[in-house]
Length: 292
Ligand code: NAI
Image (tube, rainbow, N blue to C red; front, side):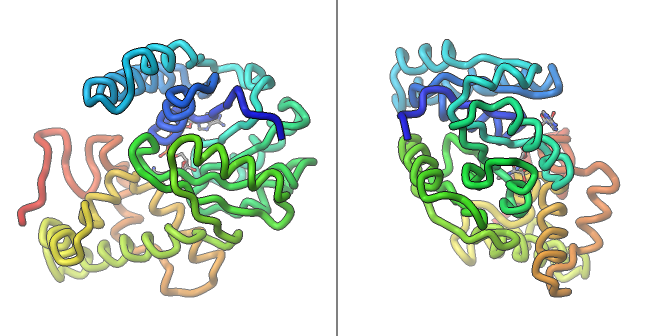
């Protein structure tokens, strides 16, 4: 496969903006598309300040930072992505919405383009079934935040070709990431293990075993994790965590994956985590650091 020059990213939320930043700072032209104009404005501000932080810490040169901002183009028109060599989708975690998007992308992307999903848990094989190019559909699962976290999990759908796999892995490596390969089963590797831990942290809070601060401190200092599970859930987004638990529950068919009622209630109440200023913790007043 020819060297990739242009990356399309769909969804300019916390993941899509980070993926676009990675691609631009690694010398690729980027189209970042979102249906919501405000999301694009927020993404530009977030990418610009993140790139400046990388420059001020000496992690990239000022020239690379300036070049990245020039390479980044924003759009609400999906047709603009027709020149991309790979399109990475990072929209809402809903199978129906993603399938419709993949069908649309199949109709507009160039015939050689790879269609990748940053889904946390949805079946790549089922997303691929919405297209006429299932050999060129793959999971490219970045961790949050993409410019900082070292892993990209690559998920092979039932029909993903070796060529698509190698090209996607090479792109992740060009971004400086370590890759792991997962077969296409619910939750893949990372979320299959991480999300039940987060769900169990909600049960621990729900059943009154301990305070949120003590649950987070217990896991942070007791198991050497950089963040406690409830803080991490707030960073990921409680809506995203709930969607993943539902996929695990349905896909693996075991009641141990049933979402904790407290997680469901928080999402029902609009407490989605940091992105809404309120989740398990309240970020509207002051930054919360769980006590040691
Ligand atoms: P987000 O809610 O921050 O951003 C989603 C963006 O997609 C929004 O700006 C929304 O306007 C846009 N959007 C929704 N439907 C669209 C459509 N049909 N066309 C164009 N734009 C559309 O979500 P986030 O957290 O960035 O997650 C995105 C994806 O990445 C999800 O599949 C999620 O499971 C996955 N993911 C999330 C992680 C996290 O920690 N939040 C980690 C790894 C993967």
